[in-house]
Length: 303
Figure 1 (tube, rainbow, N blue to C red):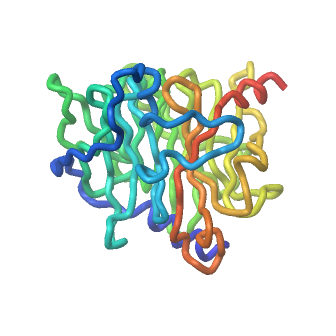
Figure 2 (figure 1 turned 135 degrees about the vertical axis):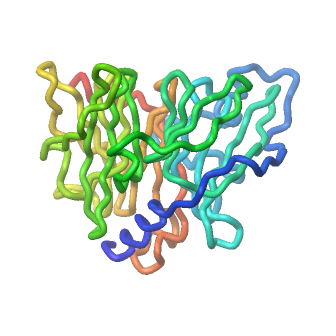
């Protein structure tokens, strides 16, 4: 699995200039006059229980490669990354709920992994970001301020306090998770999280808005095979607790990574290699976006 993990991470770190200029109107769900607003959430999909399920088969999940699915805080837009039809490039896809119907409204060359501020006003794309304009569109792409503009980052997430949590990816396929607090109107110099979090292969952090927990993926002793997803809770003294493996319903012998919690706190989204792609000889050809009820977080917190 090690060799194919290298191939996959290279896919995840490839970059191109992101331009949201190609607009399409592809109807993904027919509006029913008797359908409530609740029914239209999450692309109209039936919510999962405690067993992970592929998200939106035929709309998002396919027999190819889709990663990094996230909703805007108002749950009216869904962003994810997929390979194009020729399997040569990666593109960012936007699905938008308009009057109860979900449409594919934009595609653009991929840069980084999407992450939204809690107010929905900023879209972070690793070392880049965009701002909502008065018209509701996105501003031009801008690099983050130094030193974040030059760090080899796969995912940057931000808390309500403005703290950045991000991974530093190295050329030898190792990396750690770092953080930078927002103090007196600027971000401090990045600091590496402790060894309880970092093993040299810890990536794709998701920080809870209140910084009460951190979710990330890692290859470490005691896991189920390839990369697994873990959660660490903030302790009363401010330190981070020992990471907890999310268990064999979420983690398998395959590659699981890039987890995040929906803005309403209800569901965990993550990536998993599936089918033939779970075989170490095939190069991760099929990666899907899964979702699962996130109620387990409070259960783990209370243990």
